[in-house]
Image: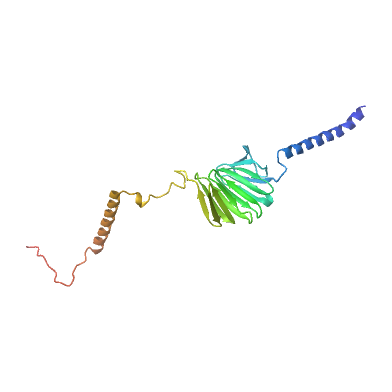
Amino acid sequence: MTSRTWSRTPISLALALAILCTYSMVGMAQTGQTGPTGDLSVVGEVSVNGTNAISGATVFSDSTITTGQNSSAVVSLGKLGRVELLPNSSLKLNFNDAGVTGMLDQGRVRVSSSSGVAATVSTKDGSAVADVAQSNVFMVDVECGNTVVSTQSGKVELRAGNSVKQIAAGSQDTAGQATPGTRCTRFQQPEMRGLSSGALAALLLAAGGAVAAAIIAATQGNDFNFGGTPIVISPSR
């Protein structure tokens, strides 16, 4: 009796394992995770859906990827292309066999898409849409509060409201307003038209005085003899 019980144990374990695998595959199908996946490479502190991630992890569609300071992440998507997040960035990434979409909440993201693959990155200001007819490499930057789209290769459209801007390779364009105090506005110089009339007059007088002083310094010690007889003043008189 005992030997018969032990002989049935491996069969029972194999059956239980088969049932478990079947339910796992069904669960993945129901959550939509049977499509393409991404391979993650990280530098520094990176999280996926709030959980710390390491290089070699698998990224599924509808994942939120966040990078810390001095950190970066690359999601390789095979024939679709790849998505790179730069430091202090957060992107919700979706992809399927036809294309890649992302919602950029902060930071910068660089997208490389293959020919025939639709690639779109959206922000609060609009969307950067790559040309599906060719391969593209482009960056979307929201660090300053507005949206800056630059194209390295290919062609990208920046769609914001009723506006559509064509951004060719080597060019960039913007949508929205930069936040005051960011690196995009901190070093702007005041325009001349912003000076009052009194300040402008004082500036011109100061410039004129500087020119006069330079002329006097350059000619000091020279004799101004223009062809006439010089007048000599006797010190005894």
